[in-house]
Image (cartoon, rainbow, N blue to C red; front, side, top):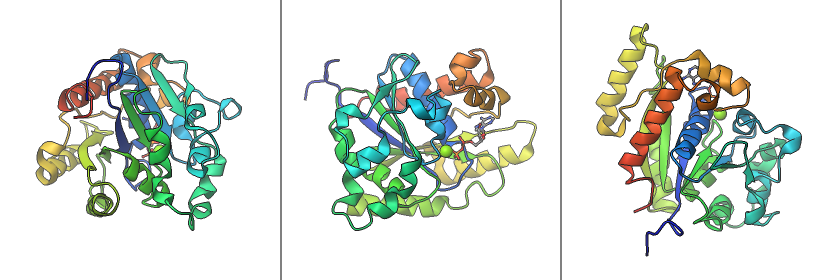
Length: 267
Ligand code: ADP
Ligand code: MG
């Protein structure tokens, strides 16, 4: 396989943690924007019925194309799924309310675990990296993300009970690897909402490094008000306040991921 710039192989990464409020959506948006700033062609897939990633990139409800629901239901051609955002190199497949019913609607369908994979495979080569923002559960939507992906990024909030549920997530990844997707692996753990004035944050970071070793990214995402403000303005923090600690951290995370993955390309 040639590795020229016209036909790189797309790396697909699921951002997952079955806990809500740990920074999945925030990380997906800001990592995607930072990778795009590094001239990667990035596609964000909003797989959470809440649609926070779509809103967080400034795409109001009535501006959304057919989205991930149509992809799962095979109601649209894959080429019609992505839409451009106002940010260079960054496209999105949006989520809408219908997505909330998708798990039950798919329950008896053949190949229900492969729907997202099939849609994203059809887009392969058009992007360098695809990031999937998962809902806070380990149901059929997240299963679709894990079956479609090469690897998994797990945001871990530096708070009480951060590691709770992580072994269940790791077991789930193992099961998916055995049953559906032999190549799936853990790309890394991302420590988020780190507060250096709070000893607990440091304890959680130490715990995570003790447990996962080098699989924890060196870059730590600080708790930074500019990050959450940016989200409510429908923009990545990089465009909201480029000099904030949050913007610097997500750029550093993108660079670390690119280094770790040999410039983002799939092996
Ligand atoms: P999840 O997608 O895992 O449910 P979110 O990314 O939506 O979590 O984050 C939960 C809340 O925390 C959001 O309101 C978000 O703006 C806020 N948040 C996330 N990361 C940070 C951060 N590093 N600093 C400050 N606020 C953050
Ligand atoms: Mg979310």
